[in-house]
Length: 474
Ligand code: GDG
Image (cartoon, rainbow, N blue to C red):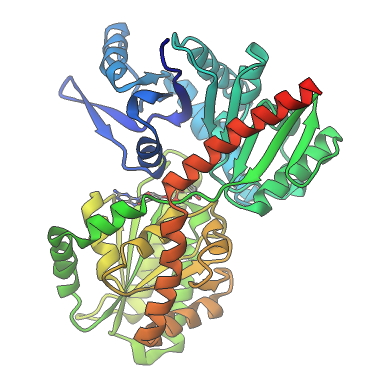
């Protein structure tokens, strides 16, 4: 009998297709999800459904892409330009993203957004159901596909469906603002298991269900339309071994030393994020300004090296944020910089993976100042790259990672003075304390790695189905 495949569905496939001089090029993604799933399953055990990152120019190119991806067990869902605008940039990123990140003032509703969101979720459902392979395990990922679990469920009661929400889930008071709140929670409740990064997020979701659907619940489950649904937290990890291995390679060590050599007399603070208002980039710059005001003895002795990865630059709020960052960086450098010292070095680009790890190794401090973050993998990657070197992690209490990496310097990014003082504390920290804190955090990241996360979620999903069967049998 043919072995059953596990189906993974996410908005984007773990690769991106680009057209260069009429040729189609496949670019692999180094994202945590792709590495995690690939290391936890045999590649031929899973089939991945998602958008390939390109709008085909005609039917012929579309077919070509399908054929190109087939041997890799990837099934593309094609989106038109309008769908990308209204479903992805629109409803997902101008409604759900700001609400889930506690920024209601960034919400922008447009008439087409919701109907396209529904339509595209149906498109993903059709694609998943068209798969001509035996499978009873489907794992749906993230807020772009919140209706998909119920759409799949209504086609097949027997399916084992899991859903993981990679971003925060807001308090029910905030979630209530969404006009389509009932459709969204009902959409998720089509799953058997719904996972979040933190316990608080799982409780927020349960509370929203209680308020919207008037159901009663236990601390990790509820019953809706005669089905038991489990709602639990699964903090996502990283591929720890990969970071340890890469960071110890001589080639990467030499990238790090070369980078370091540009700052012989300075401490290096790094910050790595996608361009996003949830990452607290402006809050970080304000705190750095306060630090320079409060601790003049550190002038010329420290640099803040910010790597901001281009993201969603077609969404107007992101364009505005980019302008504000430019202005703030320029303000700080104009006030404090001189011919031989530029306090903030800012790059709006993405680095190859090896250089990113080189940056982690070379720096003295890493600052994560998210005003909300589901998990924040950068904080974990930084620590995992520090098995041979030392570094202090300053971590926002609003990032999911702060619930695990308790030996970081935990800060409230809205508190400028506290954040500025944490920079000072990090700069003055004795090497033994840095080592102790790093070691304690390493233990967590090593144990609860991404392979562990995948295993835990998939085992629990299988269990929930068994529990439901027992209930029916009783
Ligand atoms: C969402 C949630 C949650 C960054 N710069 C470069 C680069 N990166 C990679 C990092 C890291 C990833 O991007 C960023 O992951 P984060 O978790 O920090 O943030 P989001 O992208 O917002 O992710 C978040 C996550 O989903 C997982 O559930 O933790 O809360 O918002 O892996 O390494 N990679 C390369 N060059 C760069 O310049 N190669």
